Amino acid sequence: MTAAPADLLIDRPTVADGSALWRLARDSKALDLNSSYSYLLWCRDFAGTSAVVRREDGQPIGFVTGYVRPERPRTLLVWQVAVDPAYRGRGLAAALLDALTARLVAERGITEVETTVTPGNTASERLFASFAARHGAGLEREVLFDAGLFPDGPHDPEVLHRIGPLSH
Image 1: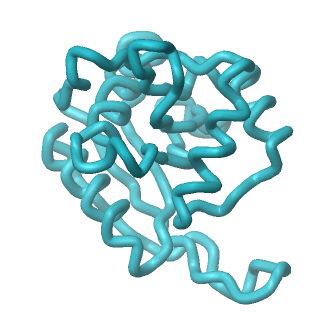
Image 2 (image 1 turned 180 degrees about the vertical axis):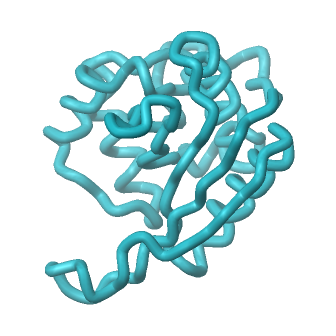
């Protein structure tokens, strides 16, 4: 498991964090940016299946949002992962992912993680491949949503990464 540096705290998000998560997603230049309202709702309704990493002053500098799939209650779907550019390269995305899944293994008995990654997003591909390796889990990939399904203009396909079963 990857740990956050001692001067940072991994925590559940609160509604007050919603605007910071929106800004982190916007500044990532890689994530699909949702409305600011959706990040507020996410921090209210899915705080238990999400995590933030905070500086000593409490300001979020990274997050992972997710939810437990209703049809597969032992599967965490990771929606977005972002880290402030000034804090990248310190293993924070891996620490967030490890801390969140450890919490959900203990609280909800999850055994599998899913996420989608667009082709060419090598940082995310590496993050989830290394997560699978750290947790002794298999990794399967398949196209979940073909590019033609997106009604709002050109969009890359979304490739599902299914990781599991988690062994530790």
